[in-house]
Image 1 (cartoon, protein in one colour):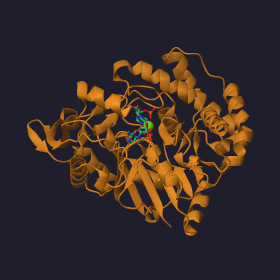
Image 2 (spheres, helix red, strand yellow; image 1 turned 60 degrees about the horizontal axis):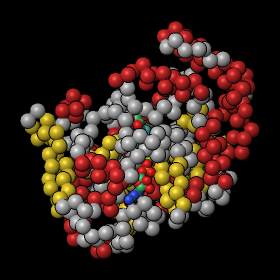
Image 3 (cartoon, rainbow, N blue to C red; image 1 turned 120 degrees about the horizontal axis):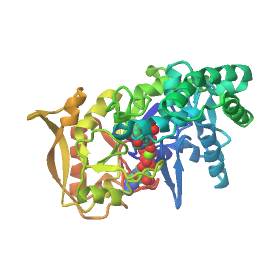
Image 4 (cartoon, rainbow, N blue to C red; image 1 turned 180 degrees about the vertical axis):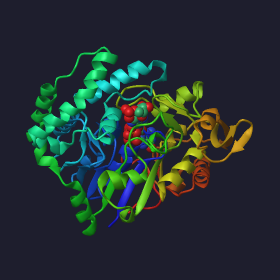
Length: 427
Ligand code: GDP
Ligand code: IMO
Ligand code: MG
């Protein structure tokens, strides 16, 4: 019963989509367990490029059943536009399963996300504006709308009314916006019910039965470890748990079932939105990483902030996720630098610190301590095995592995499925 968790080890956009797609051909189920359409996963198959937001990346593998777990927040309008976009390109999406317990991103959640960010001004989080935070807030406040609510009009109306009672006070009296009418929201949500029905099921039962039958299940995280609501750089985080434990709660599978936890790790670092980032570059090296790495958000089109590899963060990801493997991505982007700085520790108030400080004040003051590693100039995009890599690229990978605390079992040398060096099998 192999059950693999695949998650981001940094601040998101590490290449989870490509890694999931690569494994998609050998797994039976790919499950999203948290987040929603704040994610942007680019998958390149041959000459085709797909941008996925809400759907699991396994949807592109014909033998694989894609699952949206109970921990995900679902915007039905986005779901259907993503499905029809794939259908138009000949992708069969009929196997998709959606948990009846997943929460729905309602139009008022999107409005609240936008007005809150605007109100925060300079202090804003830089959210994707997709209603993610407010939907999870409603879930925890016990005023959320779940997929299954679409099948009982009276319950749905009561719940929308309860949610809007408070929100309309806030929208009209505080934010100076128009009130949102219950019947309009209920009407829109009911409009999705029939179309959604064929996909809705008890995904917890399906997944546990699959594991009992020795099927291979892959849990695909959105975002990344440092964006985790509990373990990330709070408050500059997303509102769910991308870390490994989130796979258990967000899919209804016990921790004893998980056999492998794979951290996707970029060979340098990026982040989108606000918040601390010790190795961030504001010079031409940062510009070059952004240009060569194509570091522009798939969801919001924002430029990603870029910086050198941070081993303190990688070690932290190993610890909080119990990582068994790393998948190092985008090594090819580093080709051409004579020397590559790698952050091995921080200096905080004059002291050297080896591990991520738990205090946000300390983290905001952390200055990277760099070690210089020799670079390489040879094109590595065609490398098929570790020994095909130039000696300095091999040494870079080995140094990162040593510092990060888990074996690097695969290396990405380009965006395509086949531009991967597999060192240890994941299955
Ligand atoms: P995700 O959110 O973690 O799925 O990552 P994104 O898709 O947002 O960003 C990763 C980007 O890097 C995508 O454009 C991928 O096609 C691309 N990518 C993934 N792996 C590699 C790699 O090894 N080399 C290069 N050059 N690009 C890669
Ligand atoms: P993938 O899955 C990078 C960031 C936003 C913002 C913060 C909160 O493609 O790696 P939210 O809309 O979630 O409330 O925004 O989290 N963020 C991401 N950054 N990759 C993502 O997803 C992200 N999803 C959210 O930029 O800083
Ligand atoms: Mg992304």
